[in-house]
Image 1 (cartoon, helix red, strand yellow):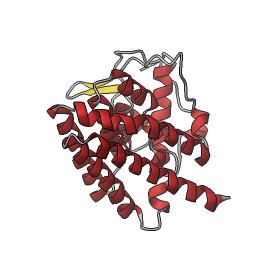
Image 2 (tube, helix red, strand yellow; image 1 turned 135 degrees about the horizontal axis):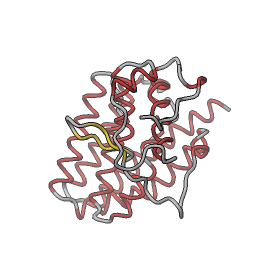
Image 3 (tube, one colour; image 1 turned 30 degrees about the vertical axis):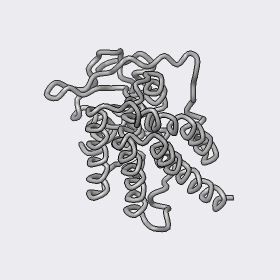
Image 4 (tube, one colour; image 1 turned 90 degrees about the vertical axis):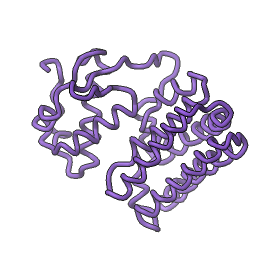
Length: 248
């Protein structure tokens, strides 16, 4: 695609896979938001992205998974990946700089606590069989990602996104779509690898939190769903506070 901007030399060869994924996400998202790639346009193929960034197919697919979870693109199997319309952000905006420090991520977690605790309660009251099936699918994908040491961010976000959809109130889902995967702390702070219990055990604990939320929603227990979501997000906030103190 001729209008696709070339990534800056300083960003073209990061050393870590996690950095490579974010470089591709930032570049493609920037082109979509800047209008170089318009809603409905087909993105470059996986092979083209691999060649442009000199990365593996796995890295490209992880980047596209992030963008799918953030509702920037959709993949049509056998056809390709296409840009979606960006949500209207004229009245509310969280800029890239708002994610720059641990303290910033904690502030956004506080927003999530207030938003998602009530969403979980409403989801328990209103969820459909389809909502439950999608949550369960996200749980299975998350568990498989732990087992295979793969990226858990897309399935983590998809679980929380489905809770928002299950409220039956589009404003919850719209706000979660706008916030995207960057509101998940480990998208900005490497909490799994810094956790005392190790990456796998840390992610298994997150998975257990998700299962508690799911079970309460499935059982249509609104108060238990609120409590499980509040506990899950409070745990994340406290872990970040401890990390912040360790860096002080």
